[in-house]
Amino acid sequence: DSPNLWENLIHRRPSSYEGKGAVECTFKLGYDAVWVPFGGYAGYVEGDVYVDEWGTTWKDTGYSWPGTAPIAYPIKTRDDFRKLKIPDPTIPKRLNDIKAAIELAENKIAVVGGIVGPFSIVYYLMGLQTLSFTIYDDPDLIIDIHKVANEFLVEAVKMMIDAGVDA
Image 1 (cartoon, rainbow, N blue to C red):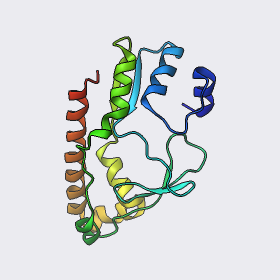
Image 2: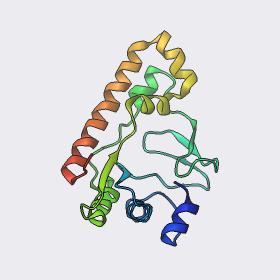
Image 3: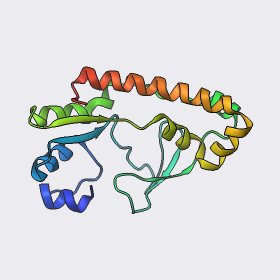
């Protein structure tokens, strides 16, 4: 995916990856399925840098649309984990892009609901260096973070299934 491809296919340049545009591109490409992320992609708060709801700071490097690169991480210690405010996966607007995609797809293509994996969440919360040291120094912290991440993701998957995703 790229904004250039979307603009060429559907004659509008997206500011972010969104379900409706993804379905339109999928039809134009003749594919039989479209991937739509749970909760969509976060927008930028200050230019090309933003902090997501988990507390991770991201920067748009210009190389990976619609993704960005994490540059600062909220968890360095167990105490940081205790202070972490876990996002609420049940916020209804998290399904907006998925519902829009399902409606536009009209059962002509499959809508695949996307989630980040639990290891990715741990990496995004700690960064590779802290994660690597913590595996040695406090492996139970890694397990505890995975438990929280999995609880969030299981709820996300249940919500997407209830909304009608095909996979």
